[in-house]
Image 1 (tube, rainbow, N blue to C red):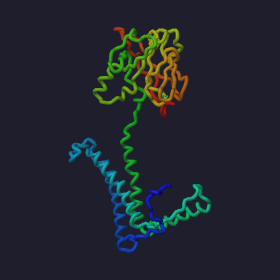
Image 2 (image 1 turned 45 degrees about the vertical axis):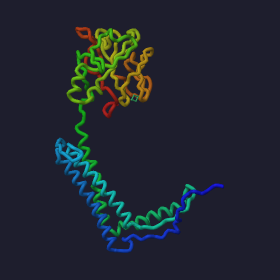
Image 3 (image 1 turned 60 degrees about the horizontal axis):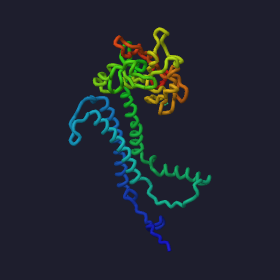
Length: 336
Ligand code: FES
């Protein structure tokens, strides 16, 4: 015999309705109304304080706080003011609903998922009645402070646009590569001789001086643009290149250098198939033919992989002939 172990729950009809104080006491209702309005007004005030803090506090000023230690005053100020602006809108709405909005028990039958036309019409009517019952039209104090809080709330989002900073200018069209700059192996930063690049191998390389620059500026911005791959192909199998002449080709005895950054959305690529000379991006499978100017033969990339012209210096190390002739990385609004 099966045993019903589900806990007993009182049915709506059996629940005795408990009136809130604000339901039966006009003074309590008025007090709750003032509390809600105060919260909405506080939200508006903290939004204004957010803007003032954003505009006036020096972003480099450090202050000491208990528990947290040294922190930037700017971050604390905009974080606290924005957080409180959001908090008071939410707290005001909850307090309004708990103290003043209609408080009724509703019994609802379970039906099929689809609603009939009558039910939909009833829902619309219920919604309209609920809007009226919320009392927003009868309580101008709440209405006005709520509107003020909501109207000011988007302001911080607009103000924050200032932090987007200046545009990149021609930085998108330049990298560290220049005439005579040596190719160094990535990570170990050793100059590369042609004999270090056997046919079929792929070497990740960076420009000479990149490591020192990164130590100084403490970011990887330049690396993201100038990292390259170096491969060697039988010269007879090279179909075309992106530049150079027969006297000064962009390869050196079959050694070719290409950007490592996919022209689709910028994934770094190192999957190279020696037999076909194809370079495959692991992100969305764009495939480039390195023996034929790095052209796209498959996938979503819209542009070929930029080639870096190379030669050797007097000491026999691989060096660049100059910067890339075309922008590296994903296309953007001025380059499709
Ligand atoms: S990033 Fe390379 S194919 Fe999408």
